[in-house]
Image (cartoon, rainbow, N blue to C red; front, side, top):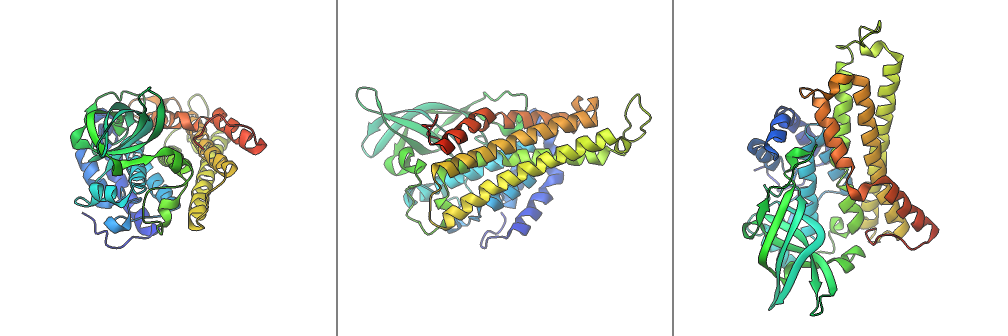
Length: 395
């Protein structure tokens, strides 16, 4: 395992991410076929330490900034979108676990500092109160990376005797006490293994429960309040992590089209090479501009989150709504850029043998996540700007 005694700087982490790229590109087709990360990719990710970006230094993690995380995982995405998506979710689940009391963190990393956590925040698990905690049952779909994780972070509801929900939050459960149903069959991001975690009467002690109402307002259960990373605003960071792999996939598509522009002509024209065409040049330039725009908005969101955390202040609802819009715009721009690059490269983009068709499918599946839907986020931001009652508490 990579030595994690000291936290590497951004350049070192980016160098490690770039070092993974040849392997990830070679294994991309196999990753799709397996519908999960191949064993050598999992091992390479572990060795690189790139799934420890949000793990506390107290356990040998890197405890980086949000901006550093975003840049590094985006670089992984240039090699494989599915791998980057898994790395992103493993990292954010480590961040979530770091908001729990120290006793829960010790459960996760005390004997295995390299433990990975997968999960789903949707509070759909049912609970029964018992001495010292709850018995939990439920099914949580879309749990990316659950096939490689040792722990699960899953949302649960607490109900009273009348069946009314009186609290909701996040639980931590060992994967050894859970099962996984094979339910992930999608057009893209096939290698993420985003299957369904299943709990059947699993004991969750009270210290492994993080209530959502306080967390949504920036009050966490960790005793280590001097750690800047674990003061970051809850909802914006859990949304931002959805766009990191998309940034990398869009860059990979741009790289591929540019690299092949001198090898392909334009059928039924006099252009022997694509790059000779003004129309092709304009498409590539506009796609590149959209990708740069996506990065700028995602980076602004990350920088704002880091800045608020450093200042020990919590962003107000308008700032948080704008962060949601930043992420949504980044996803939209990446999707539009990849669509343009498919058109620029030509029909062969959609051939099974072309990496472009996988990049196109991966980007479309990732960018259509419900919480980054463009129109909804415009409405959320507009209502926040105008001081109107909003349509969601997830801001």
